[in-house]
Length: 262
Image (cartoon, rainbow, N blue to C red; front, side, top):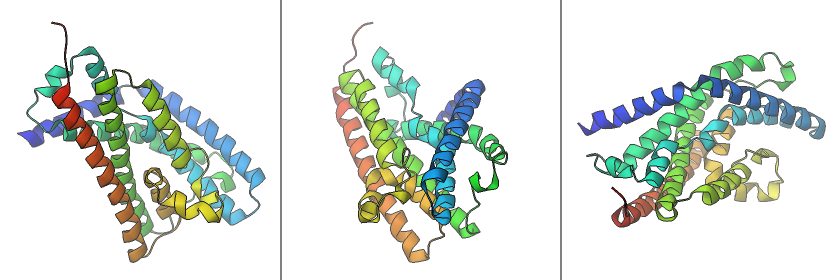
């Protein structure tokens, strides 16, 4: 029964988001424009052609999966603000897991709506400016698994924001702050692979790099089994840490939630 409820939550959220095709097209055009501008900029600034080609691939993967960073369950957040969350609280499910599934549905559908058109669009660019394929099938598998963990980490961040919303009734401040931190430390403004070597280790293992930077590194270079397990282990560690924090905040705030009116 509960499994059916979770699947229904995923399907309903996915169907609802898939309706916004015009918005998806507009987002795709925007990402294609900014991606092209960034590639042109790095073509001017980076003299090492090998590093440039890697950076081009980094930028396009970053643009293709851009919406995963900034997609959240706005419907649930509106329910919190308006008080309609009381109906959701009555569902006979693990509410935290239920919201994680809805978050994942939103991210997956948003990405799939942009993925194929974006990849096809890239073939209109000069060859040096196109995304390159992964080094191997194993590298693609490593990237896919790592990306799934990264999406789960972003979902946990969104649930932390929702937990704060339960107490403050306004999530604009923390959302803006979190988005800025994720863009800088997640590699969405400057690819983390081109920063100076002396701070690479610090940047590579901080939590926000596990969301997209870590998967991209696996796409660029197929890792050996020990190296991949280490990288995946770091991702899972931060996912568990953020999951414990978000679940703890949810449990605390749901017990104290107050609904007024009638």
